[in-house]
Length: 163
Ligand SMILES: [Zn+2]
Image (tube, rainbow, N blue to C red):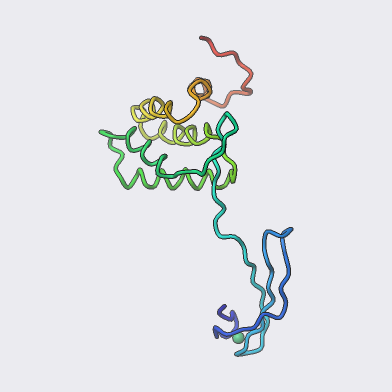
């Protein structure tokens, strides 16, 4: 670890203890160049996202599945490959912030929310593609709710869907 005081990359650990309720390790280091002490924290770099299906089944999140779904939806639109990549990365970022456990419907909805403002045709197409992802009925209820929220946010989700 490079010393913040003299930039020498040579130190010894003088103390090591758990931090943040065990999710990190705090290390006190002493620079062998200048003798100053500094603290580092070690954490797990990336927590894997787990998709929780409505049935309760769990599976690892597959970002390629999301990318392919978006690609199909935007085919023929003005949304290019770079935009699909950016969109996919944004979705993953959003899910990571929510996770590590993410309901499967949340993934489709995250995509839909973005597509809706980008391109209405892709939005509708993704909605139909997404049906194949998991539980169709559950998704359609969410979609109906989403479509109702065209203007300001609805005060509650208690409304009965006309069907
Ligand atoms: Zn130093």
